[in-house]
Length: 248
Image (cartoon, rainbow, N blue to C red):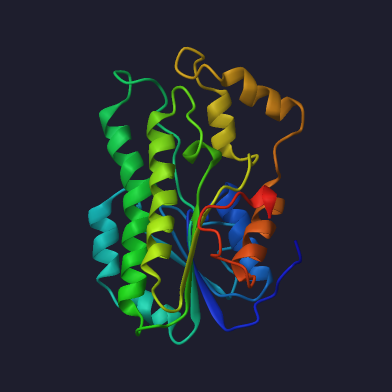
């Protein structure tokens, strides 16, 4: 896959930029000269002084708090007349475990963070733009959206929701709008570390994920971020609403 610099004036709205894949995506966008509006509960100390980065402290697991922010003119003002790139990256794998063991509060927060926030942001962004204004929306999905993993009912279901959102939005065929829900591969992040720390009784596939780390099979966040941004900026973005980045 070729490395793309933007060939059109664009800005990026990115969720979950404080660590892991989100931090790598933020760094990649900034390296390519793309202004980033980053939404997260906490900032990124390594990037916070970058002149092209604007950080907004908002809890994406709190739909009311996100709704209040979306009522401000900040999103529309940031985008201006550029092509906005919305990257819904923030997510959580918790709660892990079969039905009956899932913490109710974690379950609600997972649905809010993994599904409600991306859908709210996508809707608000389109509503803030003139008709037919170009826009690209990237949901960071997962192989778990397409394959059932024991113990991951909530995570699998929420990521599958993003996939079907992308399929349906594409079917709406709104002029100027491109969308894709992309599986980035198995990336070496804090989420993977948390998965490896899960009790085997809650996650029967623990040994498989431990082996991925021990064998060096995990993708570095920087490599995954570069591939995602390349695809997002490329001419073919959105042709397939649910691709796997490893097959592009």
